[in-house]
Amino acid sequence: MVHNVKPVGGRTLLLFVVILAACLFGCGRSTSSIEGKVVDGKGQPLSGIRVVAVKTEPLKGHKGSKTRTNSQGSFRLKGLIPNSPYLIHPESDKWMAKARVRVVSGPRRTTGALPHHFVIRFVYLKNGVIRDSLLGLEWVLASGQTMSWLEAVSHVANLPLAGGRWRLPSLSELRSIYDESLESHIDTAFGIDRDWVWSSQVKDDTEAWFFSFENRFEGGHCKEWPLTRGRVLAVRAMKP
Image (cartoon, rainbow, N blue to C red):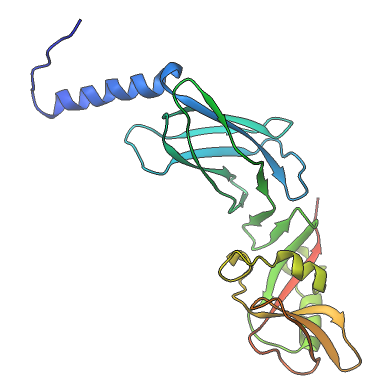
């Protein structure tokens, strides 16, 4: 049965929008779902992670969807608008992660699946520490100023941030965070922009190894001379 609605101004339109939103978002038969699995850098499932889906083209009355991963790292986001673009990301009050995935929800009454596991390698704490679940390390930008290797070793060893016990990273550790797909070749949270970074490794009596995030070059440099475009990263074993 069809009812004719007489235009009576903005109130009628508002009521119509509210009724339509209730129908679209309140009835499971008119929505779709997406499921997936959240893992760390080693591929281990992460339980209790809050996962959020936000529509990339905001629609008034629709707040997206939130859920938490189960003991196996799996999740299902419900109440999504069918055939619509969404941005899915993890959320926490204690940390931030830049991991993101863009998806398009399926037709109504269907459940789609992410093509790959949702990987969270780096987690950024509020104190500036970056947790690396692949290597089991914590990272921090120890200094944005250029300094010699001898100065860097001393500076890092005496860094009090978050309880101290920091050291310079090895070449293999620096290679691990190099990412050619990124503009600066490293996640921007590290504070490195294609810079040179001291490693902990000594080349000989007078030189130590450095790593360039410009082109992945590894070279020796006098321990007593500052690096050109040098930065100092510090690492330590991840705290439980």
